[in-house]
Structure formats: C-alpha cells, structure tokens
Image (tube, rainbow, N blue to C red; front, side, top):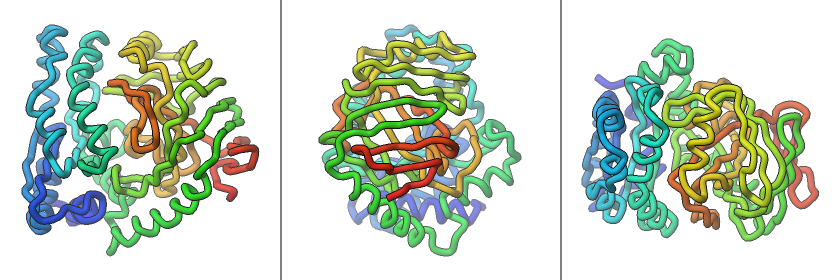
Length: 368
C-alpha cells in the first residue's frame, strides 16, 4: 500500500503540473524499478483524468553494465524509442529514483559523455516541443533509501522532508502551488524588459545580460517540488567569478569547492578541491558546455538543508543557482548542450543582486 502522500504527489503532477486531458498519451519515465509505487499512483490519476498512461522503466543496473561493458559508439547510439516518445507524447512525467546514486562513480568520463551524447536527439526534440507547448513535462523524485542516505537521513525523515517540500502533506497541495504561482509571478512581471543583473557576494562577483530574455515562474508546473524563478542569460554576456557554497553533484559524482571564472560568457578557468578532473571532463562535453544556460533564484523556504539532490537543493530559499550548458528555449536561451549542470550559491549573508541598478535581492530576500 502506497503512502497517501504519494497519491497526493501523483495528483499534483497529473492535475496541476501537467493538467492531463482526456485522450492524451502520457508517458511516465522512471529511472529505476524502485519507483514503481509512485508510477502506479501516477498511472491511476492519469486514467481517472481520461488519459492513456504508458510506464517506461529504465534500470541503473543495466545502465551500469552498459557503461562498463559497452563501447563509446554503443553508448552514443540514439535510442529510437526515446526519440519517438519525445516527438509523439502529449505529456512526459519523469520520476527520478535510484538504488545507488554513485553507480557511475568509477566509470570513465569519456563513457559518461558518450552516454549523454546518445540522448542528444531526444533532448533536441524534447526541448523544441516543450518550448512550443506541444509537450507538457514535469519531473519529480520518488523518496527512496538511496536519496535518504545521500541526505544523511533515515527513510522516514527523508519522506517527511520530501513530501513537505512538495506540500503533499497538506490537505490541499494544489491550492498551495497556485499561491506560489501568484507570489512569484509578481517578481517575474517586475523583471520583464530588464537588461542587466549584477551579483555582489563574498562568493560571487558577476555581471550578465538578460536583455530579451524571459524569467520563468518555477511554480510546480515543471519540477515537483519547485520554488524558483529562472532564465537563460545572453550567452556571451557573463563576466566575473563565482565560488559555489555546496558540492556540485552530477550523475553521481560529487565535485567540491567549485570556482568558475567567466569571460564573455565562457568558463575560462575552472577549479575544484575534489574531482577537478571530472569537472573539466564535463565542461568539455561539447562546444557549448562552458557557457551559462541558466541563472535562477531558489524560493522554497520549506527546503533549508542540502541533500545532494539537485531537484531539492536548487530550490533552497535564499540561494541562487547557475547551470553550465543547455539553456531554456522558452526563456529565450539559444545555448544547446547535452550538459545542464546546476550549481548553488548561498546568498543569505552579505549578498545582493542589482537589476538595472536597482536593488532586487538582499541577503536571500526579494526587495521589490
């Protein structure tokens, strides 16, 4: 029997995040079989909404076998089924789950890059259809032992943390997310037409252009949990440096003490205290991986601890995050890359963000 909060999580995803309509094909893409209870709850909600659910499970054990045994040519092969899903589905709901979050830890970076390259066609079709509105997408996480261990919590406490962040522990979580939308829309509306962002912090000195770009209201329509406003900065505009407050975790590898320096949009210097070689390997994934694809503010005050899960961590209230690599077409971004790596900077002390010279954000709080 599934947790009743899981059924509320499924209800949010189907009836709020993606608003499934009768007759629509809904693909539920789960990263591991451990997520089956939530996938079943989502499928039930899709059926109740009149849609046609298809569950598509992958397996980290099989992927680990492929990474260790397969050639780079085999790993970079674009899977036709994924291309078909990206081009034909009406709704795609991704469920992240794991049995071992570090299973890619001992795999050569070149093989990881090859496996990511194999998803390029899927990502291109997906990005274009999401930007046009043809495909509605939402991603969530199934609270499981592996994620609890990463967060240094037992499963019971981690479930409480995760469902609280989603507000799936409330009587009417959809009403809450609608309130989040309204509150953040005020900020997004204020940012319309603005041109320049300047960040001053003990951890960052950055200047970037948002001219012609749109901030997106991260109100639970794409991620669950959510709580952010984000955009894709003008690709060649970023200058300055940033030292990230928390470890940067990507594909199960943890990189500590990351410092990036930007010149005319491109990362020209990148250092780290731990796993610096891996940082460089990922930044060299393709020609666009060293450019910034995202600049964002985390707004979810129900998330106040670092858990090594970017779905939650990038939403921490009082932080900003930057992502190198792929931008968002719906925000006006033009940078396409197989990499999208979010990294988080705490802004809750001695920090401010100016927008067109006006104080927009100070010590983790909005000022407008």
